[in-house]
Image 1 (cartoon, rainbow, N blue to C red):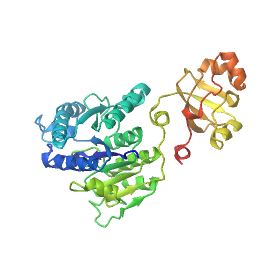
Image 2: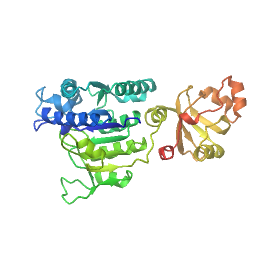
Image 3: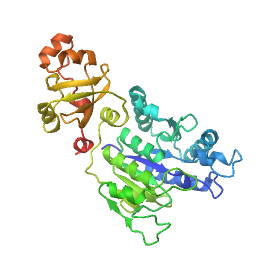
Image 4: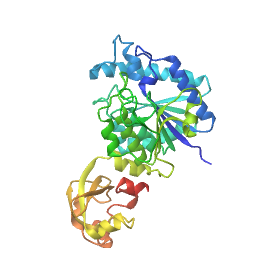
Length: 374
């Protein structure tokens, strides 16, 4: 039986002391919980915030810097401190840690995306605990993922995690801010993330040492569910806190359930990360074949296209009413498509001297995310 794979995200406020510096005691408690989870047979990937929070005090800032240059400098100093502390804490229990720093560009480039997957899965096979953070020091727009909540969701999909745990300093998701409204109702379980939930939290803000508030966690949970990964948002204490969460005893909000199914890695890249190079308009017959019958897109069903693209590029698929119904990776360039649109697959292959009967194969096609994961 394969080991279950868990992604754990730890927020800045859970790693820092009252002055904003890195708290050794807090970090050690988290490390012990991660160790305990591995000892129970789980594979674990850690997404840890705290680099900027750990570094700014070392640079003499009285509080978290507000300028991009200040944040990047603090991250450059703090990332080393953060990983060193984790490495030493985990090594004391015989666990090797590895560091990965990612940016949005690593996800947008298909080769780099595949390399990140290979690296992570290879490390997990060696029982290494990967520690991942946003590469804040070189990010052009701070932060390119928005925050580590979204990064944790995307990584959970990438590694086909069984569960995502987002630890924070508030014990779950509430209908309003519990720090302001003490009678606010907590959601113990959410089957899905709705627009109403976003409306309730749109004025929410994160802690003074972090970037992600409850709206951020809703977005991350929504993305995780779209990738087939149920999630938990909340808090906990002690060595067994992560196991308590996995056993359904966590102090927070559970989101989604085990009925979700992982979206395959190539489709994840197409759906969430790929640049779009053009549009392909299809007829009603092709739309039915895609949406209802699980078929590939054939040249015969293509009416028109826009943009210039090469083989392997990603395009949007639109129907007769110009509604986007999906995205896919093309087997024909735009110049070839201009020649073969509307033709049978046999005629298309003869004219282009190619051996692909499909313009877009079903395995490289993503329709609505809901349809793909049900």
